[in-house]
Amino acid sequence: MNEYGIYQVTIPLPFRLNHVHCYLARHSGTWTVIDTGLNRDVTHETWQAAFQEHDIKPQDVERIVLTHYHPDHFGYAGGMQEWTGADVYISDKSKKHALSSWTVENFAHNRQFYLAAGMPDVVLEQLGENDDMFYGLVRPFPQQMKPIVEGETYRIGELVYEAIHTPGHAEGHMCFYNKEEKVLLAGDHLLKKISPNISYHGHGDFNPLHTYLTSLEKIKALDIALVIPGHGPVFTEAQGRIEELMHHHEERLAFVLDALEGEMTAYQISQKLFSRVLTVHEQRFAMGETLAHLNYLEEKGEIVVYRDTMPHTYRKL
Image (cartoon, rainbow, N blue to C red; front, side, top):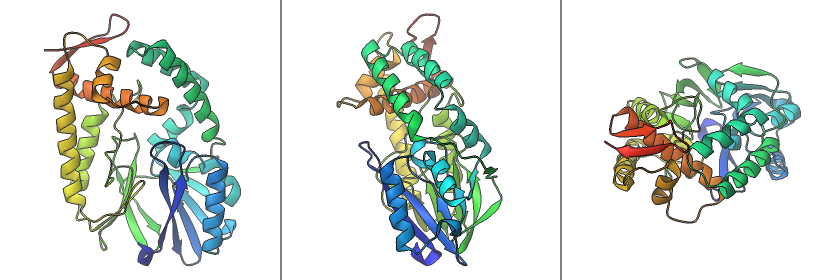
């Protein structure tokens, strides 16, 4: 990817998934930053080292492009903007979620949402503390934000890419595709070693799994020779990986149906889906993924949901 003027900058994360790949893209003496990491000291230090390695002055950064609003990609965007003075480019849907997800109001919504999913009180308290931790990891918010629009083209490094809307992993998620060299800047939409987390957290798209599978079909139609992702290795076998991810979710849906015995809460089902011990951060993803699969099955008419009681319960039809 260096031949396309793109250089990987790997930012440490304080989770089991311990890194996020961000990128620097050079063209005619100016630079584009793609994704930013969390707002942590180690993030700033890593970017400083990358700028020094490539002889970049802060004012050389022309813009900051965000593939989506999740904190490991968005969190340091405001800090990067303060440092460089560059505009932040983000899709309108991502911008909306970025500015609303880590607020006191949304944290209160989260508690009620997880209560309805059957979360035990002790886990609810831990999730509340986890919410509070993220408050500082995404601030300051960027001030100058411009929209990334599907179908429009953007120069990133030595190539010009078309923006492609690929929601599912995150609403407003954007990939960037260069047809001539067959390069996909994939964000978290397509990863080689892990399945992108597909979650429902009580707001926005009710059926993100259906949305994600539709977005995979959209990307499958492209001729892709190189995938540059947000986590894990750069890879070439895009079509095969798309097939693997589709099959993975078919298996997970079948597992959810098999796990449903009588009436169960989403939390009880998640405990069957994820049998290993999870951190509180992973509990959030496990619950979100479980609910995404349950919502998919509900819309297919394969399960029924009882939402007139607390917590909500699910049963096979």
